[in-house]
Length: 84
Image (cartoon, rainbow, N blue to C red; front, side, top):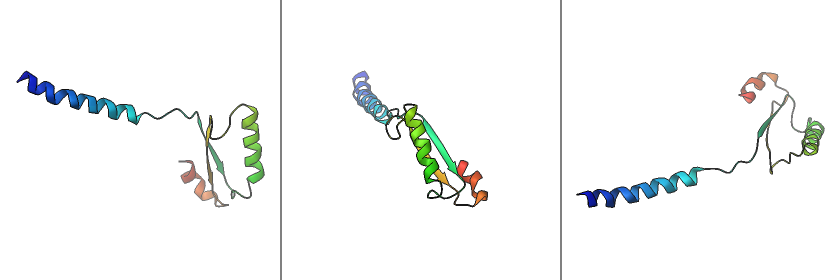
């Protein structure tokens, strides 16, 4: 009886451990949100300036920091939903 339990429990434990190991994601650094009230094309010079300033501090988008951009396209009433 104990051998039967061991035969079923050991593979289940191994499978559970493998699943947990696969679920871990590598750390990609901090996530920064960039929220603009205008369109992305209107804010392009500011976005580039922001990226250049971040590079000056040692943060390179896609390497050690992730930047998520959201734009309201001139519709300020969209800002609360974009920020959330």
